[in-house]
Length: 269
Image (cartoon, rainbow, N blue to C red; front, side):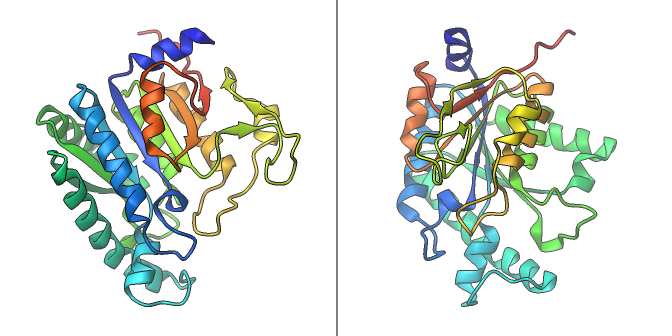
């Protein structure tokens, strides 16, 4: 187990996915304090020489608040409109926060149609590599403004795993509203056991995954397990951890236990 922590400590190219529940208050409005903590921590990691890619949720929720809507839209066209408004809000805040810590960010909006097309996929990789070469922090979201079922992933957990795989990242960190994987729902069972390391994602692991509890996100633990499977199959270590205190990422880089580790499969070139 300690060997995994040492490998993670040495990770250089890191993709961090942050969910809506981490970015927002229970009121549905953006949690600016937490976003600031996240920006500061990722900027400091960048200062240590790490290559950082951020996959963010929250556009639709931000748009709902900005547009004065009473709840998350169920109608597709209204959801698309909220995403369009909210994406501007998100990037405005991220740009301002990262700039105050001395870093440049860029925006990349993706869909499944783009990442699964061979020509587009290589263009995406080229764009990422160029941005990282120039010390930019790419910020990625699914393009919910053109979202239809046929071309979207539907949750940013899978998008983050695909991104980590495309970039041959060393590590994918999925920040959520729970400390990691348990053998049962810890909010319903006080005797739930925490699972620090998963070396194989099988039916027993899938069986302990539950639905989203926050009410504002689209993905539950099962989506994170599915995303972890994609990433580890590509040779990327995955950590699922609580995003309440982004500064805990420092512990991860110090080789200390943080969240649940899903061990990458060894790639044979």
